[in-house]
Length: 135
Image 1: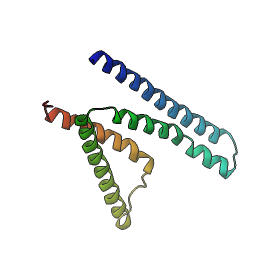
Image 2 (image 1 turned 30 degrees about the vertical axis):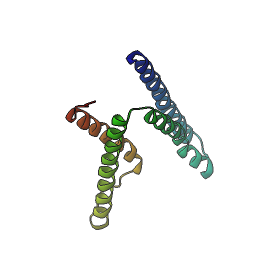
Image 3 (image 1 turned 135 degrees about the vertical axis):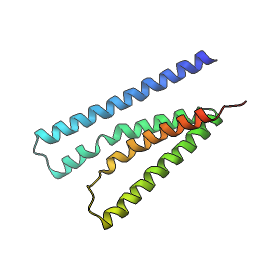
C-alpha cells in the first residue's frame, strides 16, 4: 500500500513541478516579448495575464490531489490554509490602512500568493509536528 502511495505522491510531485516549470517559462517568455517588442495595450495585457494560465491548471491539480488525501491530512491542510489566508489578509489590510495615513513603499499584490504558500507550508509543519496522528 505504501509503495502505491509513494508512486501516487511522486506522480503528483512530477506534475506539480511541470506546472511550475510551465509557469516560469510563460512568465519568462511574456517578459522578454514585452521588453523587446512595441506591443499594443491589448497584447501587453494578454502577456501580463498569460502566466496565470498555468497557475489555474496547477490549482486544479492541487485540488484533485487534496480530494484524494485522507480526512486527517485534509483537516490539517484546511486549517493551514485558513491560517495562511488569514495572516496574509490581515497583513495586507494593516499595510493598506497604514498606507492611508503614512507614506510607505508600494507593494505588489503578486507577492500575496507566494506569501500564502510559504505560510501554508509553515502552518502545516507546525500542525503536523505538534500533533501525533492517532488512528
